[in-house]
Figure 1 (tube, rainbow, N blue to C red):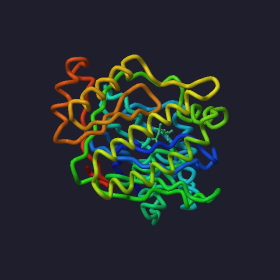
Figure 2 (figure 1 turned 180 degrees about the vertical axis):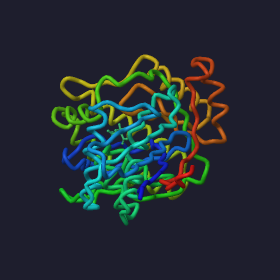
Figure 3 (figure 1 turned 90 degrees about the vertical axis):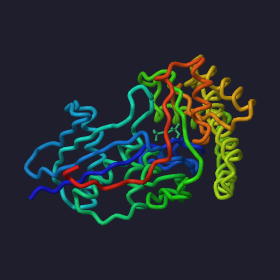
Figure 4 (figure 1 turned 30 degrees about the vertical axis):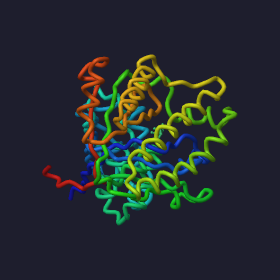
Length: 329
Ligand code: PMV
């Protein structure tokens, strides 16, 4: 009998960033982080057990992937084989619904969806919280894509893998949205994995970053509870810039910024000065994400259209947590 699982997971953007591991093998972070799940970007992944096959196969957007990509996910699927005590090889079919123009990394939604599909295919009884500890081993940010709305990734304790998991904070069913200003959609110059390690090992600012991220997390959770959008935005923008600050302190320095990123940041500051609350955050790439209120998104877009092309501006509302889909879907 064929055993399959099909899951959908949305991507997320961190408002309090994760940047640096305390355990490279287990993907345990130095600090806790917090994100917003987005509905516009998601991955659907189907996993089918193939007990007679000799190797895993991996199709991404219908294209059979090469050895390197397949090996990466095969190592990840080993975690589920081990948990289920079932050594079956699998076929993975994954579709990324991330507009190619958005330039957003899809690893968060990809590893979250793959985790859910493996859980279902291997018939594992795993809570969402425990599943998030599996997703974490594929990509740290995937930990948070198991839940919708505002999600915390609690850093956990010491080298205890199960203690480092996602926690749903708030459904974000109030006026919150995100606008992506796509600056460059090419492959990033330096992977987050390498960038983090270099920062942890060499940046003089790193200890201060970790300390202030922990404080920002407490402050943003209070602001979320109070539904204080301006406070959430201010903390988000400051936290993201501090992460880029600690990267600049690395040796050699790391910068993901491009001239258009700076331009976008300045435009958002100008729009804010006109009385429209909107705040910038950036990840390990030059694209700019703007936290804003859905009720203001069209106004902001209109102003940005003077400086950016329509296909550079992509909007998203709040996304939901992981879903198992019917296999006929
Ligand atoms: O887990 P990764 O390798 O996708 O790293 C995520 C790093 C940032 O996007 C910069 C921050 C974050 O918390 O998502």
